[in-house]
Amino acid sequence: MVSTAVLTLTGLAFFRVALLPEFGRELSMSTFELGIVTTVFAAGRLLADLPGGALADRVSAGRLIALAAAGVAVGSTLLAISTVPLPLYLASLLLGVCSSTTNATGMTYFSSVGGTRDRGTSMALFSAALLGGQAVGPAVAGLIASQAGWRAAMFTAAAIAALVAVVLGTRVGKRADEARPQLPPQPAVESSVMRFGPILLLRSVAFVVFLTLGSVPQTLIPVIGADELGLGSGAIGLALGVGGISRFVGTLIGGRLSDHISRKTALIPGMIVQGIGVALLAFRPTVLLWVAAIVVMSLASFGVSVAATMVGDLADPQRVGTQLGRFRFAGDLGLISGPLVVSALYESVGREAAFLFVGGLLTIVGLLSWRFLPETARRFGSGG
Image (cartoon, rainbow, N blue to C red; front, side, top):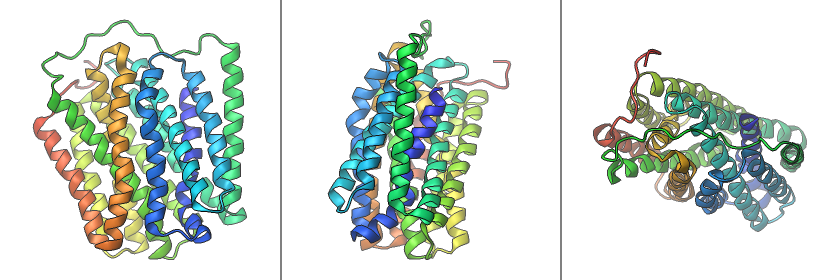
């Protein structure tokens, strides 16, 4: 139930990604202004991260997700009727708040439901639902837009979100057991591990991975597809869908590695390979290279899921949502700054500087994590 809702609402919130070039053409918006759309979305997430994490420790999953679905319906409708940039920005802000609420609920639920032993796999399932939505959403939006226009795509998102809100609201009203999992107290990682350095590094992983997601696949990938490769919204949405499927596969692999070998074995190669995938875009793009870069960076983008798993290892079981809220807050600082900084670099300095900057950040944080992060869980095979 929770995973299906996360997948659906994430997909609807990400309808806008494949439609960015359409917004720009119809509303006469520059690349920098389109970067602001993604930044405002991130600002909404930022506003909701800390309170959303605290609420996820106290309120049932069904109630929070029903509220988020209602907000997605309103935001999608506002975006669909926009004729100037301002309501588009307001809609993106609201969608960001709803995205954060959905993420807080799902992340807290799945971090707790499986316990320490299988937390990596459980968190990978959450991320798979999240990434599945990010894959399906742009692809469906691009398909609808190519046939009926971008406004029809956003009205479709609003109708589906309203239906989810009604179904969840009715279900919550009838069932009293729609609550977050209640676990017995679990042994925490030794307090010596919970020092400032490792916590800061884990939040840095969230920051740089979300910076990458906001600036590259959510902003510049569509711009390159439209402006440099001459692709339409349908083709861009399909390519982003392939990237989302690649992230889906990579996240499941990363979750299994983190449970059955070690957390760091999954985290560090993922960060470095993702940096390589981004750096491919520094070369003059062809359709083949563009798609290859999307696939490589997407397959390796599970670092944030593994880092969140490590936060769950370190957190007090009764405050998992609160700690993950702070983790997501750091990530959304990256999401809000990334599109502005990297799109400005792209316009003022050039493609090479923009993508080498992002790839270098991923590589540096990966190497710092290898050197300074402690291992929070280690198992070999299924025997424990």
